[in-house]
Length: 176
Image (tube, rainbow, N blue to C red; front, side):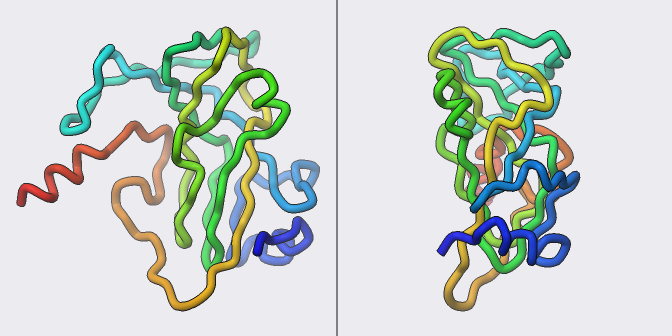
């Protein structure tokens, strides 16, 4: 089951944290999250799963930044979220999708217990000018049935900003 907007509000500042929170961003069964003013772009044309991949941080100026097709941009939400007892999910807003902007390649599924900023895997199908603080995605919550162990991975939990892939740590862990 997906929580309604009214149900999200009942759990706000308890099992669900959204900071900063603005009630005008509440929808019937989701909450709109905004794009922070920074993006991370990988430096190399070929990425390697087994190693850290160098990346450059770029600012999205108030007058906008044009994104190019064929390039992955990592962004993050302006809002920090924390969820206990529910499974958080992230999807792009339809208005954003209708401009050919995708906010996640595969990582729209969150884990119960996740706390942090959401890293967005942004790509566009045609050149698109984006702006900081625009509401690009929506978070919604599923109930969870049965006992569970909350997410506690050190890779992405309680992050402070945009997170590049840390998959290489899985390879390091498996070699020990």
